[in-house]
Amino acid sequence: MSLSWYVLHSKPNRESFLFSQLKHRDIETFYPRLRVEPVNPRSRKVRSFFPGYLFVRVDLDEVSLSSLTYVPGAQNVVSFDYEPAIVPDEVISTIKENVAQINQDPKKYQKALKHGDPVIIKGGPFEGHQAIFDTALKGSDRVRLLIKLLHGQQIRVQVPEDMAQAKNQ
Image (cartoon, rainbow, N blue to C red; front, top):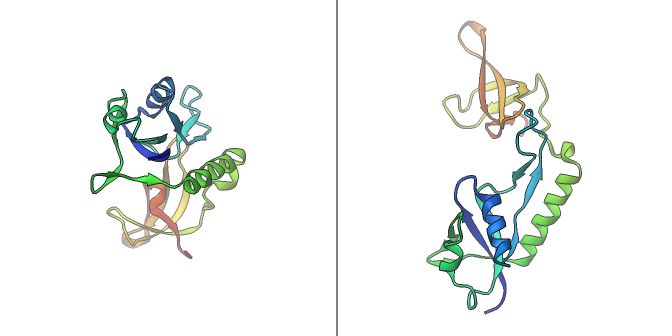
């Protein structure tokens, strides 16, 4: 075989630890991260682009699957039909480019919803309801929406940001 990229699933919130463990073992690793501006200054300043996953470049004839899964912080190698999934080099380079672009100008890639924009809720108990975008909640991946219910009264609800879709999309 030859060197190929594989996806390594980490234990919850252990991506950084696993990354350091793999580097210590001289295994080529790609851990895509985004810079964020947290509300709490003591919070993490970087966030995983793929939470729970890292990419490793190894030759499986030289490094066994079990040796990867027994690295502290690792769970398993992503596989399909008991075969480790190979990630093409082009995909890795595209991810690297995209992460670099986002980190260079993060404000450009923020959601374009503004206060007062009509949205449709995708998922959850309010799925399919129309709402009005109120605000993105700082320090979380949630947004606040206004929904008209009985007698035209608006109530505020908080949902994950990916559940609020612009009405014109």
